[in-house]
Length: 161
Image (tube, rainbow, N blue to C red; front, side, top):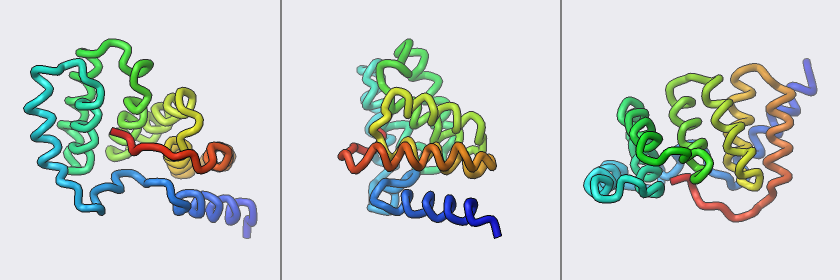
């Protein structure tokens, strides 16, 4: 048995279970994602540059498993707010979540890497990056990302969106 692989997987599992949220965890908390999406759809025409509204819309669409409309929202958001990736770091996190939900592991990895570069203290970004690196078979990268999550510590963070 490869003990390094075994230990790394357990370390990854423990880090993911240590109080950090997983992808789309609020759906288990009874969030009304349809109502959130509808509310954002109503408000965005009058506030097309509001990053938080766009993030809430994308998050709702992802939790509703509507990846097509989540992708459309991201494209419109990027058009309405040029440079959003640098102005609103959670954009990269949501873009990674969209890619992850579609099984586009390389795009998810790239987005999560961009997120942790901008927000190195956010445990959720490191855990997501470690997850996708493990899926891609990049065990050294996953271990390094888990180390990043541990180094980020227990700093309180708000869920993406």
